[in-house]
Image (tube, rainbow, N blue to C red; front, side, top):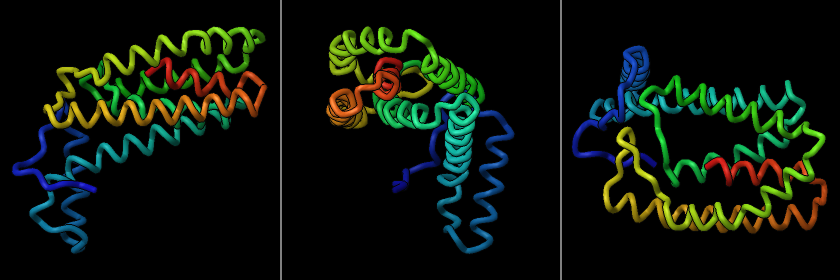
Length: 196
C-alpha cells in the first residue's frame, strides 16, 4: 500500500530520463482514465518504473532458470534473496540498469553453480557458514547506502523485518535440509541468504 508523502517522492540516486518520462506518461494516462487522482501523479510516476524493473527482473530470473534447467532453484534463490536484500540493504548503485545487470549476473552464477559436480561439498560449506552470515545480518543489517538512505523509523522497521525474514528463511531451510536430502535445493536457499 502506498502512503501519501507530504511532497513528491525523492528519486534516490540518478534516475535516467527515460524512466522518469515513462513513469510520468503512465501516470498521466492513469489520471486521464480516471484510475488515479491527479494529486497522486508524482507517487505513480515514481512507482511505475520501479514496478517495470521488478517485473523485468523476475521474468529474467525465470528465463535464466529455464535456459539453465534450474527453474525451481532460481525461484528458491529469488524467494530467499529478494525479501532479505530489500530490508537488509547494502550497496545500491545509482543506476537501475546497473542494479538489474548485477542482479542478473548473480542469478546466472548461482544457477550455474547448481550444475557443479561438487554441489554436495559446496552446500555443506555454505551450511557450515550459515551461522556467520546470520550473525552478520542480525548485527549489521540494515546497511544504508547514500543512494538509499533511511529515516530512524525506517531503520527500526527494516531491522525488525530482517530478523523476521531471516528467521523464517532459516526455519524453511532447515526443513528443506531434513526433508529434501538432495543438496541442490538447499544450495539455492543458502545462496539467497549468503549473497544478501
